[in-house]
Length: 206
Image (tube, rainbow, N blue to C red; front, side):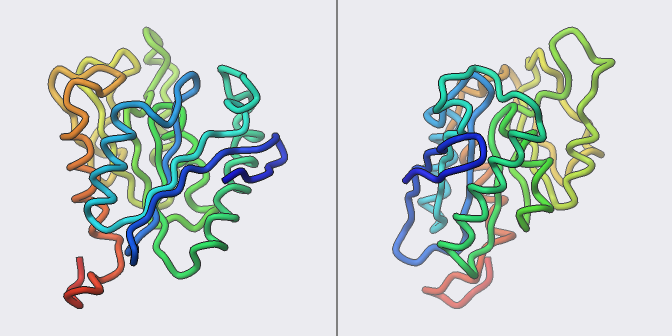
């Protein structure tokens, strides 16, 4: 589906089981797309766990830009998409996240959209070679629990454990998290269970 935002249309690829217990909304990095290996692995693991997944191609990417522009404008467009998704799936817990720049957007807007938690894949702590320009404040300012999954070889740096509810650092992984994306998916799906509705088949909480 396409959703009109103040920055132009955004595209949403929504996949759900018959009776989802949570909606996970994921987005891409600045120059990437929603078919990145880690995003697809997270989608697959989340669907297998009984969660709905919406992968959002943001308006700036549909317009052909390789950079999102100002954070305020990017966040405004993102919040419009999330408002539409919440209206379509009222009552479902919402967790949002993404990789790299998408993780930053998810952190910055979590409180505004009413997200229960954030999934931050390859959070870009700082520009390569510029540790003085830390973005850790975006993690700390999310206002909700944040799961961070980063590789120990990420040139954008690795956040401190104190900056997130949970930090997982994967040995040998770079910024693309593509050596073992299934492991990334498993980590995220297990963590999402804490925020999902009870399993309606068994009546047991996650």
